[in-house]
Length: 264
Image 1 (tube, rainbow, N blue to C red):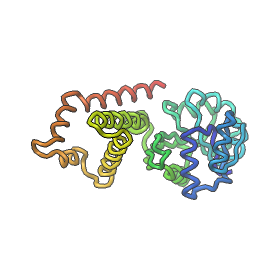
Image 2 (cartoon, one colour; image 1 turned 90 degrees about the vertical axis):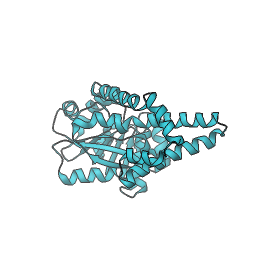
Image 3 (spheres, rainbow, N blue to C red; image 1 turned 45 degrees about the horizontal axis):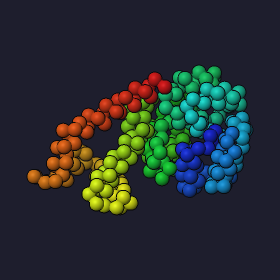
């Protein structure tokens, strides 16, 4: 098998879907392990991959293994599979707070590891993923891992010291954006708009604004100024947001998120 998953939850499903739909690896070359029978049966039915209840079977069969279990289960899973991992295999992790040094210590030997941090928009093929490989991967292997990740996400190779910043900037930030969309929709409903329509207007505005930042390359402040006509409606809304500490609240929330990630 070319690719194995230990854990078949939402993030694993997003990764499987991207890899299979983009013809990076065929379904019959992918195996997923999950102790929860409905979970593994779901991905088998949805994607046509091989499934098992044995983590060791994945470790024995897969060339690349993605550890897609909750961070609190990493130590137990690694202890279970460490003896089966060969020098040629690559381990990809998606757990915040689990450093390369900690992961290598858990395996107790030299293992090729790529620490990554994807985010939930990967579930709709619009994710953002940071990746930090350890010293044992070749450039060719890093390129291969990047190809896997790019099937469901934009990817940046970063120094590991920035990984906790990534957690706050893209890993957790969808929650902040969802809160903003919800608040915008609530305001629209207050103004008389039906709620389904309110979500559509608010979400599309966020999607389009993000696309403008990425596609134009313009500074977000410049794009904001383009919307703010003199004595207009938007500049007054911006004034109120500044008065209420909008930017400061976001910055402070992200700093707390970063600190929590460092201490996980």
